[in-house]
Image 1 (tube, rainbow, N blue to C red):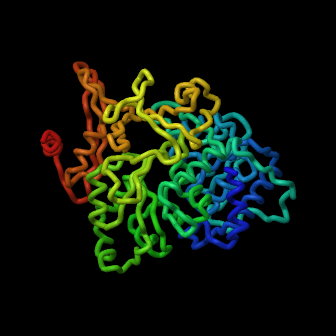
Image 2: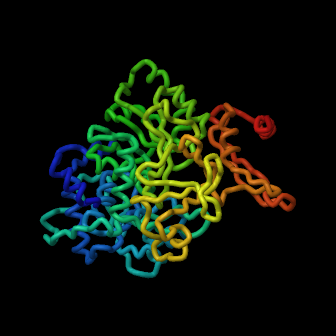
Image 3: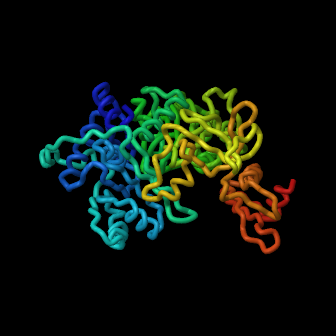
Length: 472
């Protein structure tokens, strides 16, 4: 059965005392048996509050032991988890609260006041429950109604996850139990993970990567996750060593900060930290510049596997293989679990090397956009193919490359320009920490190119120098 409840019950029976989540700040752990108990108690609490299976349970919380427990526990009894982005602007937060039909929201003391203001603006009753994300347990069992907990099916909605909404109102992806469990299984397949594996992930639990790759993934494989409140470059290697992690889940920005940090390099070289169990790092959520990729691996001697996924596909779509000899810098790898193709505007399939839109189909692809049939029809073909909105190509050997977003394509004087090509050049400059090229309006060419650059700490580079570097 591909439901969250099945996998929680499965591991609670097989290995009840095995740690599933380790929270460094409070120095607490949550075993599979405890996760099952917390899930049952949460569902009984929600039933006592008048909620029924299918109702939306939102979280407006930072990372923490109870954040992860609520995220999965609501799904356990057939409720739908709705994680809210802590960085969302007030207007977006208010829109998502209203559009999602959320019935109840869990938050912490730090966020409660801001959340209450946004709930009041929605204009309907939404219960706010303030919790401590580091608490060992949230409920007193003897005070909960002893009602049976509903068992969801594979096709039931489990997660309502909103896209970033940077170009308009966020869209809510309806993800079923089948979708999210498949996503977790595809992570396991791509990286050959077992119950002996442990991942370090500081990615927020209101993003699909942190949710599926680092939370559902360890659940379905019977492994474990070390989940700190937030990223700390100074503590990153210490946590890997202390908790004996076998891999880590990051985004390119984290790789960039780690690669430019010199404070820990000597300790690692002198074996002051035991990183012998670390097999690889996984990068996703944004393109990884090949120059940065090589620099990290050369400096630390740890392989980075670049992958590709999106909210609509429960994170994983493509992944490079574990075998270093078969990986390609700049490539997102090959389809994992699902199938893929590169399509022209008329729907026909591109030949190898030809750029078109990447499309995917599989058990991980969302059911629909919530209450948005028009956008659903644009994104999903009747035969199940999903338009990713990403431009790319497949080479002769079957590896895929992403060249940019359809909406991000810069068209200057009729010439199509992929922003990532410019980003990759800027990343080669030794002073550049981060780079992003975009198109801006121009009266003569339609669009002109603008590049935003963040320099590494203590280093300098003028605009003239960077322009000259790009021209070369």
